Length: 146
Image 1: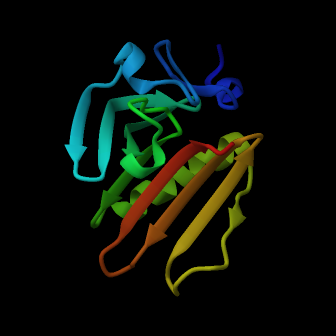
Image 2: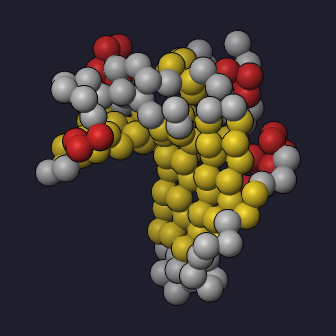
């Protein structure tokens, strides 16, 4: 299965692990670590390769107010980083995703100095943002929006 073609159905981590959008994360327990906060559960997938070569430490955040019952469904995976490396991560991720999906849509609704890019592939949205140039933070998310 090709990770790029599989994206509309779920995330394929290169090496053969496929996570279908909307499935219960707890069912197969393929995550590396699970952490609890007062209002959310954070599932860490570890450093994984997706989309034909993009390697990052991914996680999924399940907000308690958005989940139904005890099921923790896979709605997205994300990566974020802060500090001096944020700009380099942003540029590297942007180049990779543009190489796969072409030019992004740029959001106009931002503070000066912030950048937000978006790609849509069927029911999947890929977003990449770089915020606050003084204390840079990059946020990359691939999510299933039904």
